[in-house]
Length: 133
Image 1: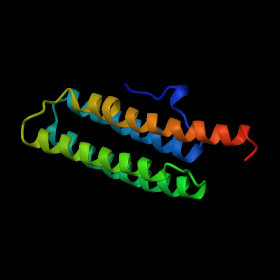
Image 2: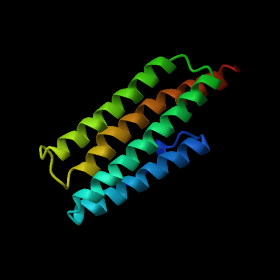
Image 3: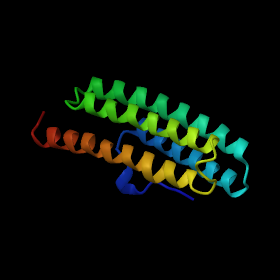
């Protein structure tokens, strides 16, 4: 079972809740992999992708509201993450990937990379608060 550590929280309740929902989807994905249910894995990957894309749109809107200076780079990383997920699905459908690795890739290679980018936002917000902005 995957979980977010305290260090992975942004401090923005809506975004943290969405991150938790994405982790729940990954955990269901892991269960489907364990059961060898390729159709369910593909269905859950589609749900994960949709949830991720919706989350990215809300997060980018939030970053625009707070005038985050690296919004373009952040948004670019989001789009690259979606492309990486699409590639993962294509490889699975083509038989180039095997069940048992997909949930781990979604958590370790996709979601954790997204959360690391979010740390830049957290640090920027903290610096602004310290500077009295």
